[in-house]
Length: 542
Image (cartoon, rainbow, N blue to C red; front, side):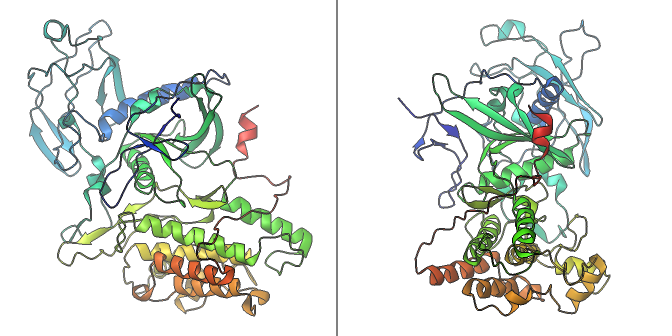
């Protein structure tokens, strides 16, 4: 009997392929097994199901599928055109009007385009058994059409039109920002693409989901699925937009980027695997062991109990050992390096733009970087082929942002950096948290954004606790050197994330005497009274 398979798009930089099936034992297969819906019953989510249904329908037209009627040719350029549907005048009118010529304004351009002039359909085409969809500035209008098949297309399909790839296009081109586009272009076509597999979401039993947590714009659910006649149960995280939020193309673009980065970085053990994407919905690894913020909070609580304070030397042996802190530093730097080097090249193609401890989830002894919805592609100069610099990052300013953003906030002369160098600076902040159990510029006095910015411009850095400043422990010394590399004042001289990752890994090899040291860590036991970041799970679930 074959092992159950999970669909994952695997990217192989050596040959450009990104399709395949992976079974739990790691073997590959070219044919898939659809997961059957679980019969387990929990609280129903009728409002969510309605929102999910609309988001799937919107995804048909607002995102570009990887497999389409034209054979999925990603190299073709598709022009923006009219969607080709009008809603019915009343519920009794079953036949949609024929597509019409119409002036359509998309992005910065307005043009007139005639589409789908009722050309004969190829006999192999299947008429959608679903709905007609019209996207308007304020809503998504959905109405049912008759269910047809190829046997009665010729006689019964008057007024119904096959959904064609030419009816839509990747909308990512209209969200390119932060650069002079007379000089800069995308480094690769995939930066503007998406790889949707909406059918997988229609196979899921969404009624058995349990809410994990919600942020400012998104909500995450625990999703349990099983296979027929199998004792195995699979858990995933289902992320989508929060109920009641106005949905626009900017939010759809954010989910596209989140899914795209996880799809492109499937080979990285420091970034979660993606299991599905459709418009507003992303399905990824289930990671119930908390995030890095939970670990830091727990470590500070434990240190106050056993050492009389946080950010002080551990004399109890109950906190994470220095060598394990070095391992976590490697998790941080390598995850960023894997993101920057998606194509296996030295020239970064994407940057995270929102690095902080909340973005790292813990799974099987490794902290993994996630939440790429604020990430941005890195463009290249048409002439030099080098990375373009960037002036704007579109993020709320706080003291954990990069030196260059502090300079800009202080209205000082500003030299726009290449974007990956702001990630390198911010990953240094997180390595500092792990090394010291302190946040930057927390002690001896907790400083605000303006105060931090002025000190950084002067070349000053967040001070180390006394026991780390004068430590002879090789792990402490290695992490301090890594921080010096992250926080180089001139961004042009600042090393890459890969160089910093390689440095720390080499130091770990020297410390352990092993060529391939284990990078996994065991975190200290968490205080049972500590409220985790996903504390809403127990509030909304029995």
